[in-house]
Image 1 (cartoon, rainbow, N blue to C red):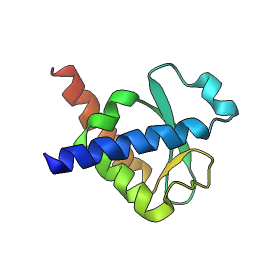
Image 2 (image 1 turned 90 degrees about the vertical axis):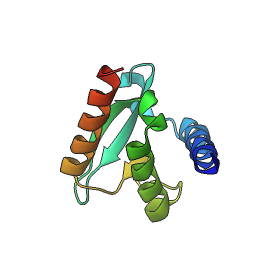
Image 3 (image 1 turned 120 degrees about the vertical axis):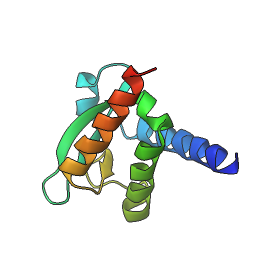
Length: 101
C-alpha cells in the first residue's frame, strides 16, 4: 500500500512539474497524452497516453529519469534515459495490457 501511495505522489509531482515546462511542442500533443524524449545519444520524441503513469513498468522508467536528471530535463520536457528499443518494448506491453481490460 505504501509503495502504491508513493508512486501516486511521484506521478502527481511529475505532472505538476511537467505542466510548468510548457513549450511550443505542446500544441501537437493530443489531449490525454504527453511527450517524452527517449534515447541514450540522439533523443526521439514519443507521445504516450497519460494512463501509462499508473502502470508499474512506466513508473520504473520515470524513476530512472528522476535518478539521472531530477526534474531538470535537458530537452525542456521529460527525458527518459533508456534505449528507444527498450522504451518501445515497454510501451508495447502497456498498450497490450490496456486492450485486454
